[in-house]
Image: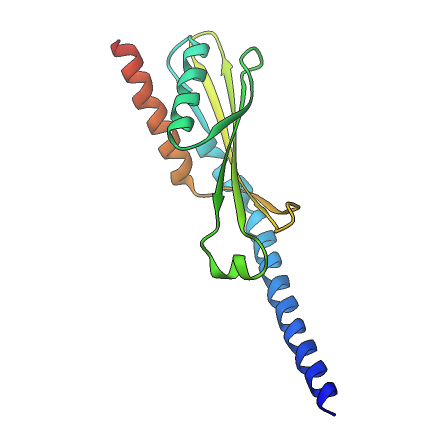
Length: 161
């Protein structure tokens, strides 16, 4: 009788945990569907013809923010950087999601009189075993605006030299 009661309690707790986890995943998927609302903030045009300088400035800005360069192709104008962080959320730690990484993909495209930069910030969460749990676009427009504002400041410093 006592074993049955303990088993029933354990099953009840396990069902509760699984239902909370399912709600969390459904919330993440619902938020991901609105990815196109940040597209206007992902692009910026610099009034210069020096695409190499823009690429170097993007690298400097991201490294100042704690990112490290994972892949770069200056000929193709592609830069991929990453930053690893630890979750402070009790819920994320409780369901086994202790690691969050942020990946940034920068595309620098020169045209005749200007350089167009497209940037995408991606938040990836990994489970305890290193398997990918979720990957979502960062949809906060301020992240993109702050990045381009910092690039503008660096560009002004470079021109002042």
